[in-house]
Image (cartoon, rainbow, N blue to C red; front, side):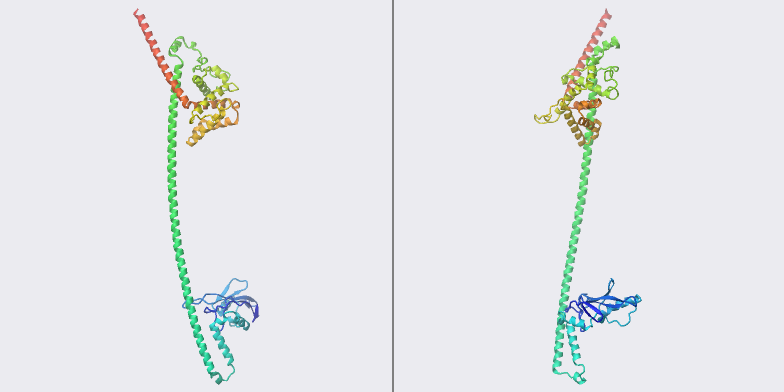
Length: 504
């Protein structure tokens, strides 16, 4: 640190010799010149420490305001800066602010002195900085000051009298000034051209950036438009697909309902035909003539006519054949009796059937299930000689697992076709869980009966069973026609006999 004159110099800074305004004939203003000193504060009895600095403010241009060094004064620890284009302006700005705050500043403001630029030690230090010799105005002023100091104390006649050497020196100084002025003018011209090139380059960059931004915005707008078009197209396709699926689902459901209705009508017609074929018409006429007391119990003979008073009076009375399960038991009995010839077994009378239902080993259930599961898997579409049982032939041990797999397959098909309500109505999930949780013999009788009833309903829909039903329907229709023909012949013979007796 250089000290002197009541201030502390922190940094000399750098001399900008080629820019106008950063030196005069009296002073040099190095950029970065920094120091501090005490000056009047807001309190009249106390002083404050102020930092002062010379900053770069740009180059001065002809016809353009601004440029040149910027002189800054700032109180230590405060954020407010007082600036000016000269040392006097900066300190006068500070003095005005102090006066406005009620702290009068006594005396005239000498900015150069307050900046330390008049201190001999500071002037000598600045004179030793690089490029000081290039400061043309300061060099001319320095020589003038040195010449005045050399002629001080001479007589007026000696001072005014100029020798030849002095005239030559003045001409040399004039040439030097002209050369410096020409150099300064050329530098200003170069600086102006440089600034123009820089400004043109900046304008070109701004124009290129503007064009790029416009292109980017246009490309972004096109991308957003394409995305919107694609989104609308996807929504349209999705709507069409959903509408098509809904139409197909409704069509499938309608066809299923029609098929169910047709099958139900066919089943009712077949049962009615079987019911009519069970009792011979001629025999029924004879029985009516003898009276109802002579009608035998057809159930013991394996038929389908069951007297209401006989149902539920066996060993399962009060447990199984009451309520809603009675219809399921009768359906199983009718199925076993009707398809006994197809399964290769005889008809079961009601008493034997009721005893088989109560069997703890579930022999009847196992036998019927094995036959039904075989029908279900034979109805699957397989190619060539492929085994539909996947290496597990249906028997007493394997049929529960085969039936469980078939029920899960039916549930998946219903879900894919959108008719999950049909699976819930059939109770597929409950049946699959029952077969997975316990062995078939350990299941309650009601659950075993429900599984058997569901298996019967599925087996009736197979191609083999439908073909057999069609054959039975045709044979029963032929038998019915034959019985009607015999009945008409008997009626004709009776009429002939009565007419013969009348004629006699």
